[in-house]
Structure formats: structure tokens, C-alpha cells
View 1 (cartoon, protein in one colour):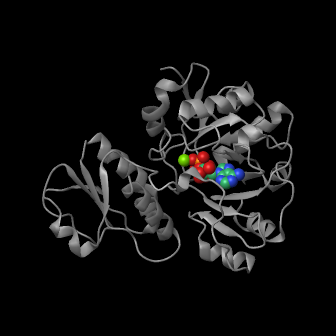
View 2: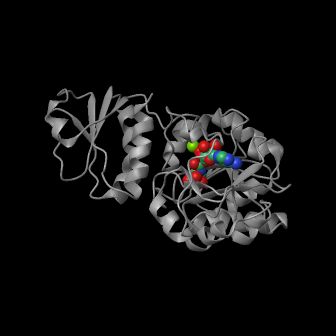
Length: 323
Ligand code: TXA
Ligand code: MG
């Protein structure tokens, strides 16, 4: 194995502080982390992930006080979002401070910051702060998948995608499956009204209710996670109404993702049987990856209906289907 596997947050923190990479579990998906103040480590994140250098990374920090060091100004409504949803699956895009260098922001004058909800992730960040003597130290991390692939929700997913590209001194921190299973909600906080750039567990409705503001239209800021063909497995994904499911080809190369109340048509492979939206989100990326490991040609998914987390699930299914 060309990397070290651990369940000890301290081992991951030490690797990061020494300028190596650490794969960190978060409550959303696994991230490929580097100490944000180490340009060479951050450059390796881009190389390992195969990500274009002008696509910015999220700075993961220990708390809102640490986030303040990375941003130049915070509108009142963003403060309310921080107070309500941090630690948690919410990323805020704000005007950057000088600390947020071009190699983090892809040269943009904004920076994305998030305080992860997972206590394990925060333990890593706090330990990195302690070792580096910087209470606002950040771990810069994208999702720990090859660029354009499905995000990983287990350490094993990361090993399959990136294991061969990591080095001896790099670490994979295993904290089991991610609870949320889809990436954080990204909110553009650079304008008078907040705008949802990527839907997630924190819903548009919640952002509007918390801030008391109408949501703005999505900004022009580049977000690769919003490229039409992202989150893609090799199998062709089709979105389908439950009533149409009996019409799909009866083939052992065809997979089905649908909620518990919907039956699998004869001959198809059931990939996931979520009882509710929470289970749907938590099992979605595992199911898409399983389709590939079973070498399925097609996946038929019946999307969840309604607002909230269902919006984020539909968003990811649509992107998976777009390729
Ligand atoms: O849940 C998550 O957000 C996970 C975990 C690991 O924290 N991270 C994640 O990172 O999904 P990534 O890089 O795969 O997706 C973050 C998205 C990217 O599309 C990136 O372009 C966008 O956030 N982003 C980062 N900084 C930005 C900025 N300053 N302005 C606009 N978009 C930004
Ligand atoms: Mg990603």
C-alpha cells in the first residue's frame, strides 16, 4: 500500500502538518486534504485528483472564528447561516482575505469556507491548528475522487479511486461511511441576497428562512461541481418515473435505485432501497459505484420528490445522468 491507513485523527493531523496529504472523512463525503498554507501540498491535491488548477478548493476550518481569518467581510445574513448551521454541511463563498491565496481560490477574489459537522474532521483540524501554532489553520480539500467521478462516502471508495496515486507519507483516515452522503450546500454570500450554488442537506428553504431573505439567482462564479456531467459512474444513469419501471429491460446488467415502496422489476439488480430521503442520500454514491463494480450498463433511478434533501439528490442524479 503506497499510503498509511488509520482511524486516529492525530495521525492524519501530523501528516497534514508535515506537508503530506490526508484523506479526511466528513459528514458529507470524504475529502482529499492538504494544509492550506502549504502550496506544494495543495498542488499535489490537484495533481492526484486530476483537477484543473483554476478550480477552487474549500477551506475547512475549526470554527467561525477561524473562518474570519480567511474572509475579508461577512454580511449579517452569512453570520446567521454560520450560527445556525456550523458545524455542518454548509459551505459559504465570501470575499477572500490575503490569507486565501490564489492557489486555494483558483485566482478568484472569493473563498469557500466550511466548518465540518463531523467531530472526527474537526478533531483533525484542531490538532493541525495546535501543531502549526495557528488557530485559524485550514485544511484545503475537494472531494477525494478523481475529477468528474462520483464522490467517495467510504475510505474504501477513496482507496479504489486514488490509492495508487498517494505516497508513503500520505494518510487515509477511516471513520466509516459518511452520514449525509452528498456534498455540502454551497451558498454564494458575496451579494445582498444569498444564492444557492450547489444544493445539499441544508435546503434552499432553510437558507431563506434563516436569513429572512429571498434567494438570489445563481452567480457566475465557476463551480466544477455544477458542470452538467459531474458525479458520473461509467454506467448510463436514467431518471425514470416509478410507473415506467416495469418497462425497463429485464437484464442482469441493469440496476435500479428506488425507494423502499417501489418493487424491483424482474431480472434487474437492486442497488439501493432507501426508506426515506436521508437513506437515499446516504446510499446514493455507494449504489452508483456498485453499479460500476458489477459492470452494469445502465442504472434506472426513481428520484425522490419534494423539497429539502430530495432537491440535492435530484441534482446529483441529473448530473450523473447528463454524461
Ligand atoms: O461536502 C463538501 O463540500 C465536500 C467535503 C469534502 O467538504 N467537499 C467538496 O469539495 O465537495 P469539491 O471541491 O469537490 O466541491 C467544492 C465546490 C467545487 O465545485 C468548487 O469549484 C467550489 O466548491 N468552490 C470552491 N471555492 C469556490 C469559490 N471561491 N467560488 C465558487 N465556488 C467555489
Ligand atoms: Mg467534488
